Length: 292
Length: 340
Image 1 (tube, rainbow over the protein chains, first blue to last red):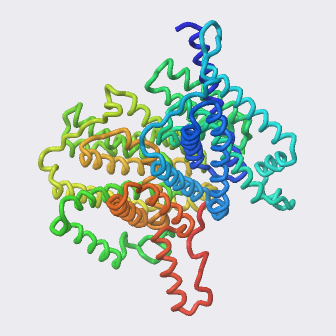
Image 2 (image 1 turned 180 degrees about the vertical axis):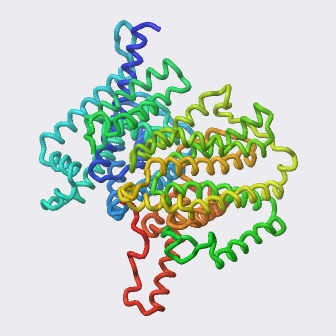
Image 3 (image 1 turned 90 degrees about the vertical axis):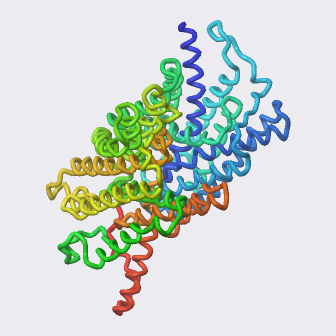
């Protein structure tokens, strides 16, 4: 195992980490703003992946098809998220947190079966878009261009989120709600509307992740469970409600995952849980969180 | 039916009140003659229900009694199943012999994992329990040579246990004894202490209860009883498999307890019955049971927060109040406060 092999593996871990970041950033915002642990986030990711399959099949797998999927699928999933938030989550805002967890878990089941009804149980896959299917030379060995594109996308999302959260009024409101929801409400801000908007944006991000992962992994039932567990791990490790923490946590988990595959292929997934256990025991507020 | 208020306040100083004893007796009598009334397929379904009833009741010791929302209870269920399978397959134990060790193994796992988990509360506790449970799953899934990995571990029960009626009676006996023990635990001073911790952990600490130790004890006891349920599951399926440990399996007792109502002892049993028989009815009609299930769950959360038993209790209480002439029949404070 040469150093360049390890470096390449780490970099593909970074790429996976970026996908995880897209899902986890939305999840951590939902958690911070709405105080809901949204199990259905993984389902939204999965719906976007399947939707991008249908779109690329309808439009023929080239660049245009993928671009269309990139635009349409996240919007679709964002609308779905909006419906879920307005019709369901708003009604249980005052309930103890276990009921919200249970509700979103029930949604996971519903979405899983709806996907199965719509697309069947077989694996699907879509090819990478032609202009991104090559490889670049990295440290003397080929590295898939598509992974570089994912990393670039993730960086773009991170920058956009940073800008919105720190430089816009809306972002300030969001951060204020994460800190002290009651106070923001008392100041006359329409908190429910902000919550809906945050949920919709988070859903859009999950959808983006789902579209981007579609050409790389297999589109299959069960991708919702695997991503949501990792995303929750990222949220906790990074610190609930903190997007920088989500980025840090996602990169950490992504790299751990890839290194884990090198070291112990069958038990690679365990690394994530060990990290999660360590963080929860040693620093439960997460890497970026503040002690409650 | 026990509500979560202390037994003392209701003026009972026996373990089971007379009316209750009659009700339980009738149910047990029915269970005893059930094999004479229904066919083998339905009998296996009832065995499934009994196992899940125990699983859910053990879980409600955590959720309803102490207020700990665990998402990793399947770990102990699965450990119970694997204990039976491993002892039978690798150490030559009989299935029933292995069943005696299932709660021990599960209880030890409960102590070890609980030691870490009870340091946290709320959402973090929930996720840590899920994380540990997934860790156990990963080990079972990945350690092919020991646990059979994805293939699972076969369990070969002795011939006499393969008959539905015999296995039904064995399961019935185990589950009845286990649930009776759980009942005694919830009614004991230990159980009352747990309820006090649920209502107000700080106050309980001020009164002198070591909150962490009590939580750890509850965690271990709940784990042990879940292990019995798992130990009964393995011979039923003729194998122990990693799916029993996956986090989605952990959701079953949560949903069953919530459906039936977490504030009473029988709530989880009712919830288990609803889920097992509803699932059977649904899968008989359609392949897409999850949509119906998930919708039922969503509706339950939106409409019946106290679960089925809670809803019926509220109605009963409402009728009682109307009968007694109270002006406000809808007493919101008659049930203990739910933990925020």
